[in-house]
Amino acid sequence: MSEALARSYWERISNQEWDEAEKLLHPDFVAEWPQSRERFRGGSNFIRMNHEYPGTHRVEILEVMAAADRAVVTVFINAADTGQKAYATSWFEFKDGRIAKLTEFW
Picture 1 (spheres, rainbow, N blue to C red):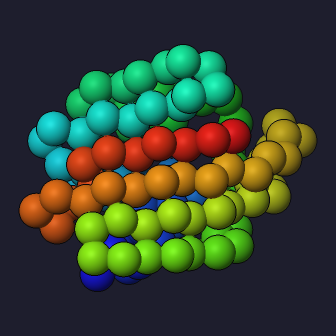
Picture 2 (picture 1 turned 90 degrees about the vertical axis):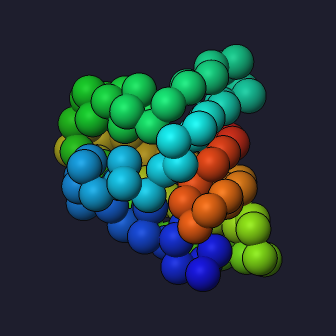
């Protein structure tokens, strides 16, 4: 289940299905970006930030490693209308069948 949930999250982000992506997030959701020292509390705040980020971005999932309540996913942003290309590694923690914590390195 953890692999499917992590993949579903990235597929929703790639397709800009914001409402569907937010439904995957636990009510106590927290996202952290250690490299910029940003912390997003609450799924709606995190999804709104992604929604408002300039341009459209398509995501290619490169690798998934999953266990019972955790997953690590590496993705490549390979088709952004802004010309941006980037790799990201996302560390997922799950609770009650939803994503409770997401730590991302870009």
